[in-house]
Length: 517
Image 1: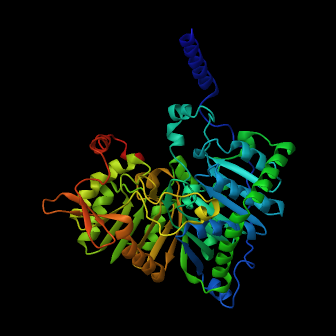
Image 2 (image 1 turned 180 degrees about the vertical axis):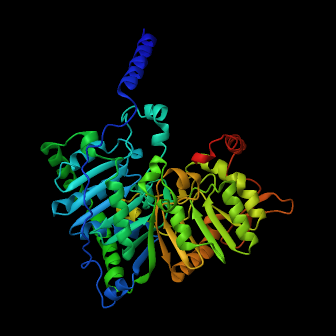
Image 3 (image 1 turned 60 degrees about the vertical axis):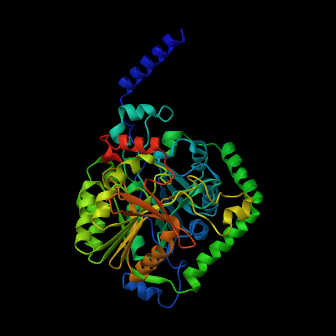
């Protein structure tokens, strides 16, 4: 009887799909005009106007998780007119809710808030977003939404070519004047605030000429036909439930006085960097894919990798790549090999198998390791743990203990590279998905100072945080684990993996799915 009912339900669902079609409904969101830029209250100093007149951009690299979350909160709390945000992932956790609570406070004081989240994020925030959108100063859109919000598997069955393209962008802009971009999504593990897992990542805060293009990019995505208003997809909120959410945020804030104090201190540090201390100015370019890439019809300068190539050119001396998900493909391997043959120093850092949160990616990356090493490319793989010498801000505030060591307790998530005095920091991974499927954003900075800082940091920390891969006399890959006392532990296969895991990776690598990694 139950079996018969299941068949009937399946047939009914299939009939509904056939009758209603697999396309999204007409987007009823109204197009909006570009916002005005309000820059005067963000940076001051005698040389700011002069630097701006030269078309330069001020920047502050954010490799520390605490300063990175504080920078975002600084932008939210200091904004006077507009806040524009677009993110791939926005989790319904303490960090996600903290950000939403602060955005609501900004909306209460008259700031126009626009939040664009990729619908790959899921439905966990639907109830909260529905009520936030009730506020007259709070607009929310979902990008490339699933047609079937509950039974999402149906989209994979009938709309896979549509939903396989995602908005991987990470960007926040305040008053059209100052912004933060990089690799971090809005979730605890990106800000050293998870109880059992942390991502190592990189962001950059910037102010000046480059922000103008960031505004244009956000505007293009916000007005795109694939950006659907949350009210169209989720329905309208109501006063009673909105008041309940607002009260919840107020009570939560009272319970987190210590957290607030710590964050206020960090915000002050960011403010000091921007207003009291000298900041670095350089020529910089905000680069981004067009939303047309989602539909598969972006060409040439609408694609981020074309923009990066035009600005940065071909490396002549060195290339350093840091990519959480690194699948060079045969074409990329040939390119890196040619660079190495031309005496360009090439160094790559990616995740080891046990540190990678997407095992499938590692299965396809590993097929190119031998050829890369043979050509002279220096290859490093991030360890699955980081030993921390001091408590994180989250441990101090909550009293919880983040494991210092353990499988999968840490993972590389950063995406940046440098070559010949130019640095890219953003959301772009060196894999087919970033090149062909997802939209990406980032900032290119023409700064030998920043490049030298990155190179020096890699020289210092790579032996501590990563395995060094080499070929032995027999031409086989070995992994070198550098110890504090100067000794080296050698592995003859992927560290901390089982025979079954290595066999599984080999089997998976034969599947014809590299194009979507």
